[in-house]
Length: 63
Image 1 (tube, rainbow, N blue to C red):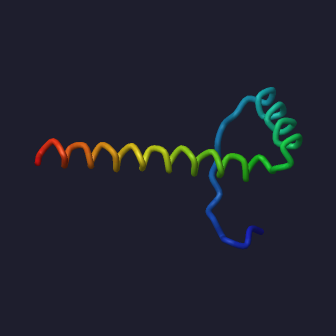
Image 2 (image 1 turned 90 degrees about the horizontal axis):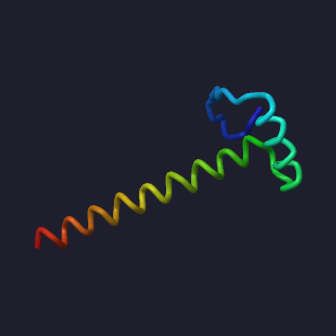
């Protein structure tokens, strides 16, 4: 069991894609779950940055 006790999530991916993704991750030396978490964290960080930038632009425009 994972030491950080994160809840499990279920996603649907066709077998061919999942198998190819497994090979890709194996070549990268990372588990699929770790790779997915890294991807999600990058996407969220970029989205949050865009939200902050948009907020800052609104604040400047309102000044």
